[in-house]
Image (cartoon, rainbow, N blue to C red; front, side, top):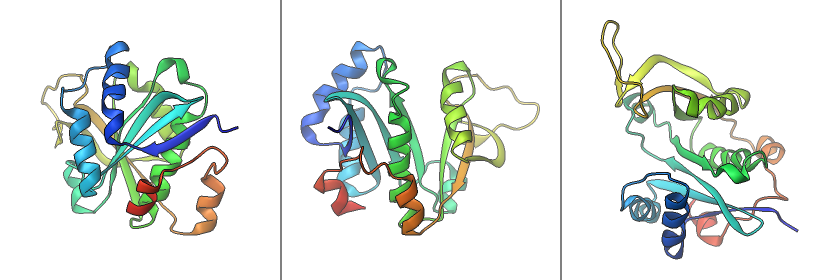
Length: 194
């Protein structure tokens, strides 16, 4: 029996996502998930949902053209907004979502990137990214997609980020090793787009 299923977002998921975020006190703009769905339809974003034992456990995105100028200029897609709800953590769900987004990115790119916040709420995520082999992009701190210059003051919030990159291997054997084929079931929509 599959315990974790990963699939792309669909129209009928919107209310469930909104309710799941609201009940856990996770704030998103009112049209956030509609925008994600629309961008999925146009191929500018990939939104994966994770279900653990048939319950929504989290989600993760990959933005194909990052707002971060370094990633954008180098055609590095950005993994973004990885969330596993607290009651589902420590089940490997974040790892499965990351594996799938990296597999998709490797079909057309040599690197994938992500930005991580710099306060305690992000410490578990940063540990996961470092463990997976992500390295800082050597640009230093970024605030609201602009480099934080020496001598300037910035606010420590969700817009203060350190960006990381992971070199990808474009070969099937590598991805067979990293894929959790016994845990992943993608719907046909995802397979048709990537």
